[in-house]
Amino acid sequence: MKLIELSSINQYYGQMQVLSNISLSLEEGEVLGLFGHNGAGKTTCMKLVLGLLKPTEGSVSVFGGLPTEAQRRRALGYLPENVTFYPQLTGLETLRHFARIKGASLSQVEELLDKVGLAHASQRRVKTYSKGMRQRLGLAQALLGQPRLLLLDEPTVGLDPIATQELYQLIDSLRCQGTGIILCSHVLPGVEAYIDRAAILSHGQLQAVGTLAQLAEQVGLPAWIRVKITEPQKWHDHLSGLGHQVRLLPGRELEVAAPNGDKISLLRTLLHEGVSDVEIHRPTLDDLYRHYVICAANTGGSL
Image 1 (cartoon, one colour):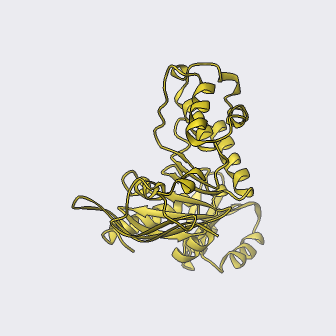
Image 2 (tube, rainbow, N blue to C red):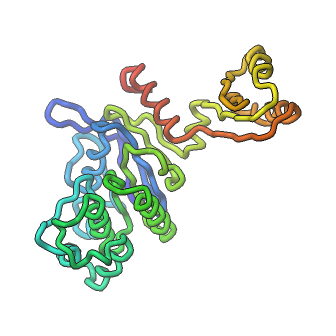
Image 3 (cartoon, rainbow, N blue to C red):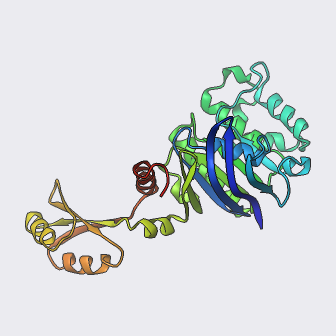
């Protein structure tokens, strides 16, 4: 079932166009990573799904209906990029306040505080919280009412590496329970293992959408085979002469670009020549993002 469907969205702020012909969907139990630089249009997409903006052109469907309908909003959780709370309230009081507003059960409050790692600080006033702690409280707020759809706008802001990993593990467990999640971020490292598809925005245009494997195949970025070999210079010259892209590295290491279909033949060749170690590095989300954004810049914003 499609939880979200954006169809042919053109969005303007006055005379300025901020989204151009955007079409996106999200299924139950799917995590969609929405990536782009600041100002790319990510937050505008979020606001359309939340019903905070009406599309200038095109249509937005949430749970098969209008995003402004109250029953649909109650089934949706949202973590904004910049979370603000009443500084004089404790974490526990804050979450109870939002539970009442949302009509969620108060029995969830302490469980959620524990889930996001704030049980020990639930009686402290929010004004004493660090940015990372406020971000965790914002996530707990978004999870009130067991939403079927979760929108997370820059959720790792202010989180240390351990807390970031815990957040991604929580996202994975929610996905397994059938929650659909849009994860909006400009921070790419670490996220690719937890998304099903990536959507890349640049200057209001959707440059690419698909699984990482689909995007890598689409652009033809090679994998890199790294080997520790007895005669790296000899093999650098030999493989370069055959037209391969080769890099010499310190410590008798060599890297060879292996386009789709070439990995096995290259490995067979290298493994017969005194190789003591081998690694294969596939194109990362960061590699794909850079490719699409650079291509968009070179073509005036569209591929």
